Length: 106
Image 1 (cartoon, helix red, strand yellow):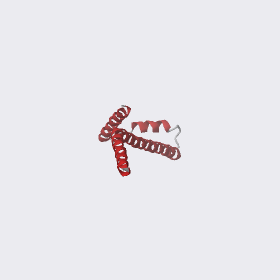
Image 2 (cartoon, rainbow, N blue to C red; image 1 turned 90 degrees about the horizontal axis):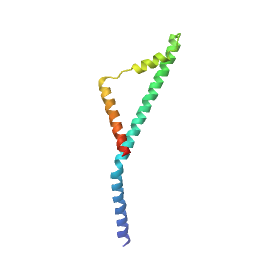
Image 3 (cartoon, rainbow, N blue to C red; image 1 turned 135 degrees about the horizontal axis):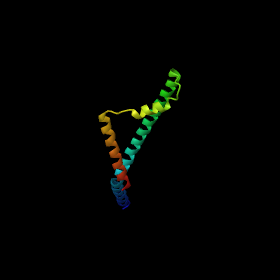
Image 4 (cartoon, rainbow, N blue to C red; image 1 turned 180 degrees about the horizontal axis):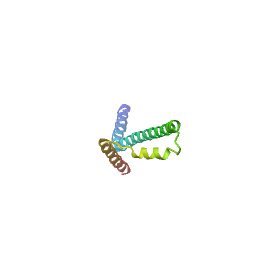
């Protein structure tokens, strides 16, 4: 009798877990993907900032400019272009992340 009752309890816990996971798996996957995208964007931002600082220090040490080079370097960084294929991937990534955020908020 005790093993039969234990079997029922284990089956109920398993069924609740399967149904719960099927309802919340989408939100879990979305949050994991968004977290990965966020970490990648933070990594890119840190790389950009490091390259900017290195460029400024190299220009000030080697070139000894008369004016501050920071505005021109910032303008150069804003002028940086991606090739067409990269833009397509970035647009798809942006659209996909917007869709994921909408799915989370439902």
